[in-house]
Image (cartoon, rainbow, N blue to C red; front, top):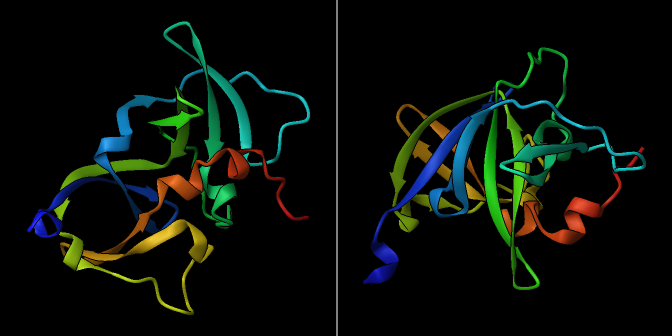
Length: 156
């Protein structure tokens, strides 16, 4: 069945947590580019970067996923995610600490997110998948990078 075919996922780190995004939504990974601050933007939006002449909104995933910055180093890369907004493909640049590798995960190997004990808001997590010796949180790009979420203000 088509549902049993493994999909490729880009795995990356934010703090001490490992995450994955389906590779189909990721167009590239870049070193952090100069970020231009945008006044009055929500706290999880760091600004915009020049991506080959086009502005790409920079999402601070640590902030968006409500992760602590206590032991945080500087983000080392931008994961460029392509999203379709009203028929137009827009690039969104997500800050990540490190990118690991592309792995294959079968849909059957993604367990639903637990009801408690998750390090991030469960609405952004499709599920947990075992990769190597640990688990990765498979993120839902449709929720994480929706227009509503990109514009939503962080709670104080």
